[in-house]
Image (cartoon, rainbow, N blue to C red; front, side, top):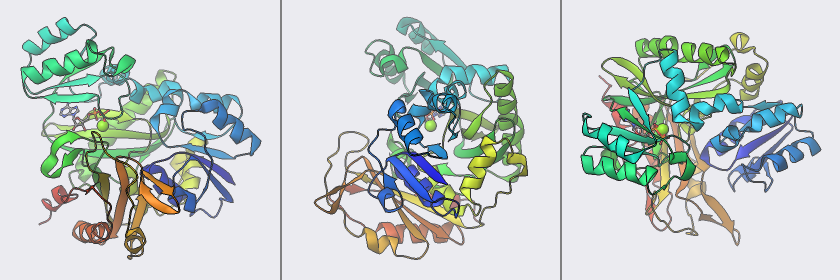
Length: 425
Ligand SMILES: Nc1ncnc2c1ncn2[C@@H]1O[C@H](COP(=O)(O)OP(=O)(O)O)[C@@H](O)[C@H]1O
Ligand SMILES: [Mg+2]
């Protein structure tokens, strides 16, 4: 079976690693891929958003299954276009991907199907938005409606901050069309967790839970990033929380989308706040999370290609999916200055030694090969991941591996997984 994977980050490296373990795969391509993925797949230089070129490649090379990593091609309708051409592709339709593509759409559906989430209002006028904020209890959360690469949300603790966020989106148009509308929502207090689920249009099977670390510095200080690390399982997702998430979030969402004529196939990612009032939805994503995927997939025992096919064929209910009891910690090695300005082209050393440690994996995110050497080429550079018998061991193993790697300006959080330790008796 020939598979094409779309994307170029650490999430896609982890997916390529898992897919290439399937005995059913005879050839794996990745567009555009990265130097880490190139060790597992043949990389083809087609951008992840270039849908027509990807479709041509898929037809010409008789690809049996395409797997989409990032959100942009999904919200642009890659799945619809491929299906119209008779191609098999794992991911939601454009209509279903609106759950991530428009926070307003997600909110409307959640309201309609009574899915617990923060109370909200939508604005396209800065003055009206400001008037609303004057009347609000702080903190307030201000979100650009559309895709903003993780930069569209402000948790404002003061009026000044709220005003700045409103003006940035609605007056200065810093998010372009994505910020033409904003959502102002109630602040939810609690601990965050991510729960991803495989979906086949009617049924869903949750993966093991994970927790991301959004802020750039330890103790959740500093600006938000694409994610500085993740671990699995997240003990805040207890059996009882999991049951509530299944019954009050995933089930009504899948039923609701089917009713709306947009049945959800693919991975549905629920960003959750576990509040004193139960789990509530912070947002939905329409694909595997990054870096949650790097922390979750090492625990997957089942052939992921079988799962993809079960989703496409509407046979998820009959698909066995097994996970290991191990804990996984993923530490992101970032470039100095990220998520702001950072330099590229710094030589990376120690990667092979780290990857050679037992139960450690180094997934590449923003890297490039220059003159035969591996150099930094993005804000998030490497995702150092390790398994352990429990979270404590996984943390130890992940940092042991991470500490072997260096490049000029390397920044990593030192506290990935720390929140889980609080649950140990
Ligand atoms: N209602 C809310 N209450 C508290 N924190 C929130 C709320 N909404 C978002 N956040 C915080 O902001 C982060 C980013 O928001 P999110 O809706 O996930 O947008 P995106 O991932 O598209 O940037 C969340 O991970 C969470 O930390
Ligand atoms: Mg998010």
